Length: 84
Image 1: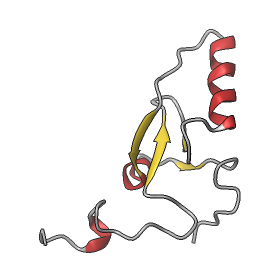
Image 2: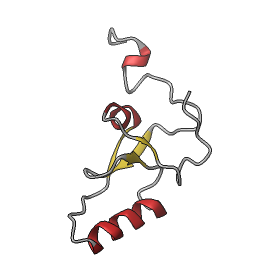
Image 3: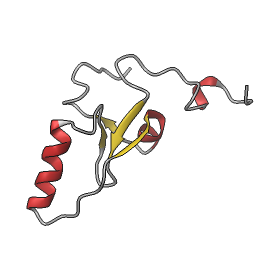
């Protein structure tokens, strides 16, 4: 439809088993989350705030963008996900 291989297009690529098409990230985080209300995400931001560090807004992004940025899956949100 747009001259890209399905795996190269974030709209057409199949979502890996155990993951979702859209995830949540923050500018300072290293992982992606299933939900913007993830307990681990909440605790991470509370910890950063308690240390006087800047916290960043949560953003909904396509999974492919999060993984392209080198982020891994949150162990709390995706406890059953095993990368292949």
